[in-house]
Length: 268
Image (cartoon, rainbow, N blue to C red; front, side, top):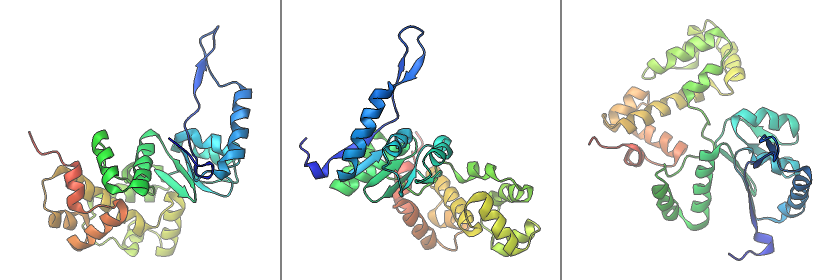
């Protein structure tokens, strides 16, 4: 493949590890090799049309100064370390992949597949991306802003007992009116204090969190295939099917029908 000097692309993967020749222990590449790669990246990276890293490959870009002033992500288990070592980078710990200008960073390996499909779609169109996704037997596209964890798994991170109890209660009451005042009353807090504590502990507003729960339930029900789209909307807390359709399209880029056809396997 030919590359114009101003249009080169670089893909950074997690660093390889090698076994020590005597003790059979793992070690990273020799320091000289690392320094040479870092210097090369620092010199040539800014000229690239696109820079992409997968998982902890973001550390290599950061070492070369290519994440400074950029919003980035990496695997959730290393996000705090990345932020601590490279404070000039704006690290997001809970997104599948992030685009900031010509820089693309992704979480784990499967998130790298999602990012790759998005790049294929950008470069040569959605039909090509769909063909690749089908060949890999993966969902066509999970957007970069989608969380690395499901909403219910992320809920375990709350520290305040009242918030944890509310999170355990919410999935069973999604069809009800879940306005902020009602949630605050259940947590025995004022609405203002509740909203502040909720956002501090979960990094999201109560309304946005409830919306994500509703979308997660709708997706599970669509995958199951036992309910009509109208019934799914009602049980998930959407006022009508059209509202759910818009929410799903905005979050995942597909309609409920498209999502179901991609994920629902008919009984044998």
